[in-house]
Length: 177
Image (cartoon, rainbow, N blue to C red; front, side, top):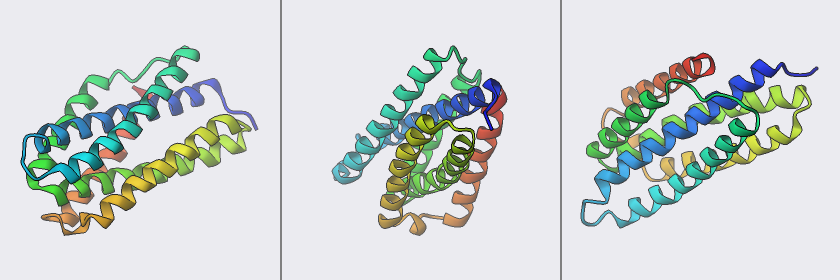
């Protein structure tokens, strides 16, 4: 079974948007933590994760360009929302920042997993392998966040649920818009 061009474009568009949002979240968190004393550990962690997200974003930029696929029209919104989410969770503290990462990466792990299956079924093994590599890196971010006490964040169940719901909504919107 082959995948339609429009479906492949949706996959590239939504994943580009997700990586764009992730970079914005980390920028927001770093904007807070880099100005605080004694935050070298989390700043280092965030910079490392942000660098991987930037690599993913750069890869999707190249794929969009190569395939003449337009990015989501929501990019300015996702940039502002991501930055605000990053700043907001960082202002709540390190555990809340990690809770944000854990919630986002939980959704992305599932999302990439579904896409990998779909791509393999369609015979697009090259993109499926790229996605599998990115998924593995996202899972490592989630695991780091969990090990750093994400579940100890203030109002963790509510915070996590809100962020996961927002991510799922952004995915649905970015596929089409």
